[in-house]
Every structure is written in C-alpha cells, then in structure tokens.
Length: 451
Ligand code: PLP
Image (cartoon, rainbow, N blue to C red; front, side, top):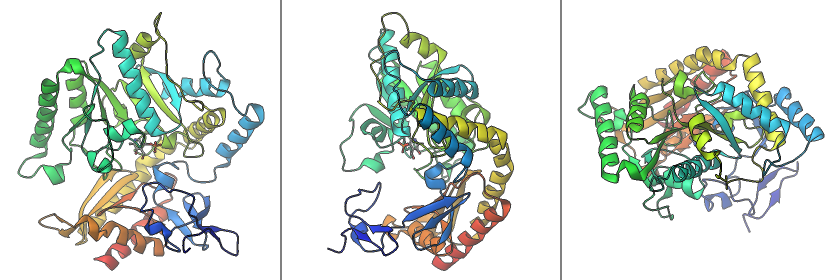
C-alpha cells in the first residue's frame, strides 16, 4: 500500500495511515511525500525531516508567540511535573499553579474580567463561555435567552458548538446546531462595501445586527461572539469603531459580548489583550488560548466579568461544567512562565515596533499584480490574491493560488498558510528585523513566481 507506515532510514516517520490530520485532504495525504514532517524548532525557525531550516511564518498555528525552544517555559513545565504532575480542579480540589494563573489573568484582562475558567483549547473555551452564559441567564430566570449571534467569516473552533458559531462555509455538508446560532454580515469592507464609504458600510453592519436582534427578540438572545480581527476566516479587519459600536448595541439589548481573543491576545497585536487596548471596548467575556502558553502546552481560558461570576456563584447555583484537564498543572505552569517571559522581554511592547515593520513590509507587496488586498495588523496578516486587480475578481477556490504561493515560499525557506486564494502569516513574535525582511523578500519572489 502506498500509504503504509514508512519510516525512513534516519528513523523519521514520513507517512502514516493511522494519524488523522486536521483540516486536511486525507485522500491527498495518502501520497508519498505529501506531508511536511517537522522534527525540530528553535527561535523563529523550524527544521523539517529533510534537514531544511524554515522560517515559521505561522507560529506553529498562530500560537508560538514567544518563539520556539524557550528554556524558561520548558524548565517551568519540568519543575511543575516534578512537584505535582496532576491534580484536577474538580469539586473542592485546586492547586497552586492553576490558582496563580487565574489571578494573573485577572490582573491582565481589562476592567471587571476577574474570574477565570481554564480548559484545554480555544474551541472548549468558547463552548464554556456559552454554557456559562446559558447557566447565568437560567439563574436570572431568563431561560429563553439561549440564541447566539456570530458572524460570517468567523472561526471559533471545531467542537460541535464552536463549529456552529464558525462561518457556515466551514461546516457545509456537516451537521450543525440548527437554529441556535445566527450569523451576521461579513464585516469586510473591501469585498462587501462596494459603492459605500467605510463609515456607511459600518452603519449597514450595525443596522443588520439591530434588525436581526429585533426579529429574533432580545429576550431570546444570550450573546454576540466576535474575534477582534477575524483570523482563519481570512484575516478580516472590521471597519474602525465596529467593536465599540457593536458592544453598545449589545449592552442596549442586554446581550453579552464575548471577545474571542484566541489569536489576538498575548502580544500578537502588541498588547496582552486587544479588546480594550486596541479596539477600545470592554467585553463581558474574553476567551483565549494559543499564545497563552505560546503553544508549549494545550491550555485555554474563559475570563468572565464579576457580574456574571456573582450570579453563577450565588447560593443554590451548582456549576455543572468541567473537563478533567481544566487547569492542568503543567499547562498552568507553562502559561505563567510564558507570561513572565513576555513581561521580562517586553514582547508586546516590542511587537508595536517589529510587528508594525512586518505589517508595513507586507503592505508593500500590494504593488504586485496578483495581490488584491493586504490586510491585518502587526503579526496577524493576510494577502488575498485576485485574477483581476482592478475589478477585484476572485480566483475560483479550485485554483488554489494561496497553495501555489505557499509551496513556492516553502521551497525558499518560509512556511506560510494557504487558505483558498488567501495566504496567512502569523509568525512568532520574536522575529528580528532581518528575519522580517527575509520573510518579505521570500514572499515577493514566491508571488512573482506564481503570477
Ligand atoms: N477561536 C479562534 C479565533 C481561533 O483562531 C481558533 C483556532 O484557530 C479557535 C477559536 C479554536 O481554538 P483551538 O483550535 O485551540 O480549539
């Protein structure tokens, strides 16, 4: 069988029928050499099984914010495992690492977000936010408030509920939680705002939200969930002022605002959290994961307001929610060490300069014929390729232009992430100026090769 397990002479697994890979064309992976096998990593680079040293232009998966092989984080994990390998945070049990991490996150999160539920992935952090809000409204005697407003272009994860909140395009042909989630308009001015100013487009988005709320009935809606910048939907930045105005609208209708900061937190946009510091708004819940541990351990957090916390902790309320590994000691220790490292090295502050250089460099690629739009902010960027630049004519998805550019880039020593006809860049946040410039040069050459 061509896709049988195959261990090459140096002992590296290059092909395997047993591992089901995520978001992959499993049939295409049956081919020999279809995979890139990553065997090592250090700083801003990874090494593949062929011995190639590649710039990690996607930071693992938008997550290795502090860079690879940071001894501070690795030692903290080892030390924690030597002290307390595992205990749960179920019932009345707790342990110092989870408690200390929750306190630290409360200190970093904006405003009155002071209570922290720890879990293992961004998907579960988002599911947890919804379960907490349903419980909260039940406790208040408003049990009809269950519906969720999300948006086209959103990515909130891959559990059943998180995928239902994700843009419908991601779950075509798969079953979904019908009726529970309602998707508002895609907030992408460049594609959707033809014939309007950006301010007019913003009014259209707000009006769409308002009519949806009126039609569904605010008494039936629990929350609105939104990424500060949509990531896996194609790095879409909503018009200026969008989040602040959406949060005002939600407040007016008593709809809780969940900011999904799984990607935008822990320095990627130059701050620990982007909601308040970048977008000037105060959510009722923030969810985070990825950069929380810089990917060294799986960990996520759902950070809720004092007001919600008080209601779910009142006399008679029982919190029927929990995952065995919520607040795992080693993951909590990794997060604490990662945050300490970010504070000591001033990573978020540094990103305000280096991330801007990255963003400006990439914006410079907008002069290429193939590049329709360069979008994003700091170390969260996307390039959309078009057939006709002036008319913004999209390529058919099957043309896989993003894939072609990504392949050309990988040949030259850079990993970038294709998404149809978009290319996503979300590198480690510790890149030097030279590495940033090298990344840009590789991208320019790769796009020129394809166009
Ligand atoms: N939310 C956002 C904004 C994400 O980008 C992701 C993953 O990419 C998730 C949630 C899901 O996180 P996880 O893959 O850790 O479940």
